Image (cartoon, rainbow, N blue to C red):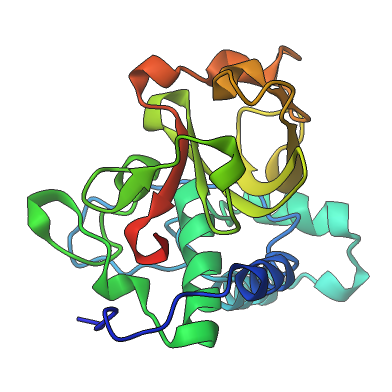
Amino acid sequence: MTDTKTKPAIDTKLLSDHLKAISLRYLGLPYFQNSIKNPNQSINATVGKGNFQEIALHTIKLAQDQKIDLTKFSDKEIYAFQKKNKIGIDCSGLVYQILNEALQKIQNINLDDLLIGTGNKKGVRRLSANLLTSKPNAVKVENFNDIQAGDLIRIDQGKHVMLILEKIDNKINYLHSSQKTQIRGVHLGQITITDPQKNLEDQKFSDTTLDNKDYTTLINTKKGDGIYRLKILN
C-alpha cells in the first residue's frame, strides 16, 4: 500500500492544472456503464471504467473490424459510432481515471492501493459513485469556502459523482459523464454559489435534466448528497 504519511501536502493549484489538462482527453466521450459481474473481469473500455487510451484503442479496433475509416468521421459521427458500439465511460470511472493519472504525475500515488470497497477489499473492481464518496474513502466538505480541485460532487443519492476541476470565487467548474443531463456523456459544467450559507441544492447549476428541469432536483443533502474529498487529499 502506498505510504502517504511521508508525502508532502498536495499542491492544489498544480493538481487543478493536471486535472484540467487530462480532462481534455475525455471530453466528448459517451456515457456507458456495464456492471462488472465477474470478479475476475478486467477494468477496461468494455465496462465503462477504462482510461482514454483503452477507449481509443477499443474504438479503433472495432472500426477496423467493421471496415470503417474513422479518419473520415466528424466528432459527432465518432460519438455516434462509440455509443452504438457501447464504448464510453461512466461517472465513477471518469473521476477515478483522471484523478489517478493526476496523482501519479504529482506524487506517484496510485488510487488502486487506497480505495476501499465492500468487504474491506481494495482496488477499483467495485468502483462506484457511492464507493468514492463513502466514509471509508472520503470526508464531507461542509464549507463552500473550503472547496478545492479534486473534490467530488455526490448527487442523486450517491448514484452519480462529478469531479471539481477548480473553484474561482463563487464559481465551481466540474466535469462529469452523465446520462441524465441535456448534454450527454463527458462534458464540463459550472455551479454558481448564490448563497454559501445554504445547501448544494440551493445553488445554481449550468446543467439541466433530460426533461429540462433544474439539475438540483437530483440533489438531496438529507440522503448524503454534497461535496466530498478523498481522504488522500484531505
